[in-house]
Image (cartoon, rainbow, N blue to C red):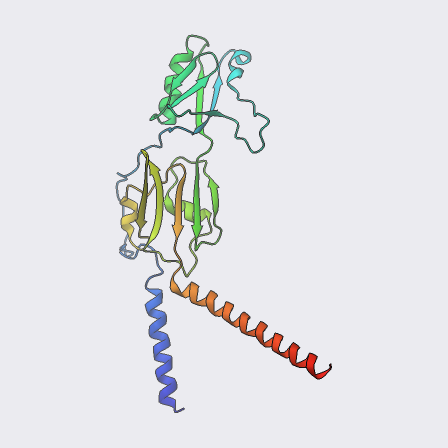
Length: 249
């Protein structure tokens, strides 16, 4: 082979690597030459839905009586201690009974319970949190898993960061968000290479969201090549073993 041949191969390798890299960076349409300041217009507070499990803590000047709201865990293994919202959107509480909570934010429920409890306690203070707030991240990420979230204002990029971020072989333009809402399942494509994600109504995750990251063909080719290599090695070893057994028989 002459020098021109090697030179041509080198050029092709450089061009192919550049072509692959252009799909890797996030927010490619962001002007990085200056600070950018934008108003946040796409955030809406998380609302309570049926099957949510609520932690409700009540404090007052009479802690002995208000302590009945401290939910005691039951004996079921892996059960989450808390008040579960039933299919009709109600939660059943000590003293005040059934309360409609579906569609309320945790702050709105705190205010509602605070008013209702004034009949029974002096200066009650109510704290509400969704205990089973979680998101699933799977596919071509470092640590696929189901992640429990403490912050009700968690974004899709934060959820991906919890999973160790996307692998280098992940497809960043077609991340799929799966969301169930109002009895319907939605499959929403997310483009991480564009800063428009920050304006998306799907930027903030909801309870039980699923995020799927698809691997590109490079990932499959690498795995497939390794599998075929291993198969050939095992086949070769088997042939050698057969030949040796016949020789020393």
